[in-house]
Image (cartoon, rainbow, N blue to C red; front, top):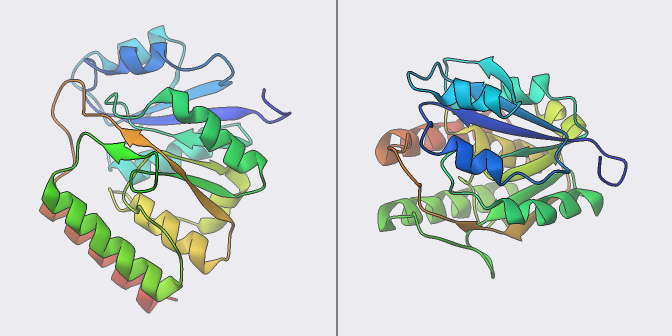
Length: 223
C-alpha cells in the first residue's frame, strides 16, 4: 500500500518464458498485486507466473482483451500496465504512480519527451506513431507525444469510465482518445523502452498500424 492506495500490476503474456522471470524479479515490493493474463502460452510462462505468486487468468483474444480482463480482476485503486518482454523499466514505476498521486486520472509513459527514448523502434514504426499522434492531437485537441506505448498507469475508476472495447494492439489508442473525449486528466512522463530481451515480438507494423487507424476513424465517427 502506497499513500493509502493499493497498487495492482497487469501484465499480458504469451510465450514469454525467456523474459517473465526477469520482469517479475524487478518488481518493487510496494506493488500489492500482480496479475498475469496469459494468451494460452505453449511454454512455461504460466508456471513461472505462478511460482512468483502472480494471479493468473487466461484470454485468447489479444492484448487489449487481456488488459481489460486484468483490470477487471484487479483490486487496486491504481493500476500499472506493462509488457512482459523486459522492454519496460520498473524503476519508472515511481513516476507513473506520482502522476496519479498528483491528481491525474491517467499517466502515460512517453518515449518522445525529454528523458524518454527507445532501443526498439524502427523508422517505419516511428513515423507511423508520429502520424497517429498528429491526427489524434488535431482532432481531439490534445498534446500527446506518444500514442502506441503500453507502459501506463491509471486509476481503476477512471479506466472503467472509458468502456474500452479493443481486443488488440489498438487498446492504447482507444484509451488515449476516450480519455480526451471525456475530458479526463492525463499526463505523460518520460520512459525509455529497452529492446526485447528474448523471443519474438507480437507487434506487426502494417497489420497493427491498420488496426490503430481503424480505431481512430471509428472514434471520430462515434464522437
